[in-house]
Image (cartoon, rainbow, N blue to C red):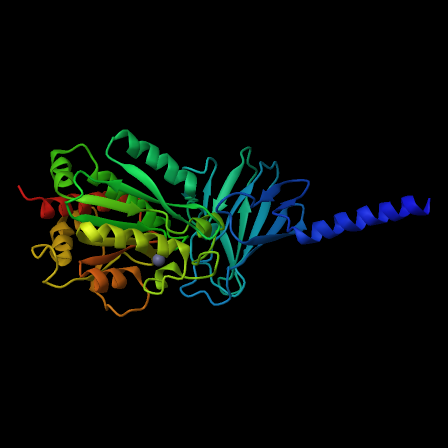
Length: 386
Ligand SMILES: [Zn+2]
């Protein structure tokens, strides 16, 4: 009897212990289930205030995030009564207008006028009417590896693109480089994206840009006969899957690691570029990001490989098209100090025109695509020698 009791207590305490160790990624009440157990969900915890009110704590992967981009993504079950979801951003202000989707594809902004802001914008309380559908709510659209796979499947159909795993992230996810190359003697354009996980507007611009470069137009044909493109659209797959605000899982800002190369994600690209440049020339570097405004940060001088090419002239050539769709932007000649930023590193090492392509967090998604297409078209017009 004693022995049985011992085992019962042993198993009970063990299961309680396990419960404590594995944080639950959900809060379930009699009305609704809210969970964050999927790729891209973020570093969250939750508390049931009552059956119709769930509080979510949004946590950064570090305590000293620069340029904080508080990220969360959750899923709520259908619910037949009103519910409240309270977002607690801790010491940080919310940055993104929360968005909602029932299919994780089409997203709408929640109306901020109906959201109660508390504690100097560090808490948002959102009321939801009954819903007969499961819904996602997130800082921005949830753009994880599956989105990139779907896109690559579309690109493969053009017959122009191949991919190569050039390394692995800290958590052993593949770092994938894509190649569009007709002749390896042609100069290469290098494009990167998603060093910073929440920056999905930059991802949309990168996709629009590449899609235009491989479009079936004659201009594109001529361009791809003269230039190769390599791109790594997802530099930080671990950060993206874990819903990080900025860093990789070693808590390193990948866009401050260029030159140091302490992380497998940046090492993979750097080593590939070193091998590539043994036999080939680089023409141009573009790194896609997001911030509060549309900004093109450029570094160039007149003695680069393609002396006729100028980032400034390219952007200026695109200006009327961009303003025509009401895409407002700043063009900034930025410093080239060795601060670990990819643009500066590539510019200093390879002496090629280099740009950080920043897209506003709140830019209209259709305009992001249109503007990146305009820029890609103007780039091809500028570079193609007839
Ligand atoms: Zn960024």
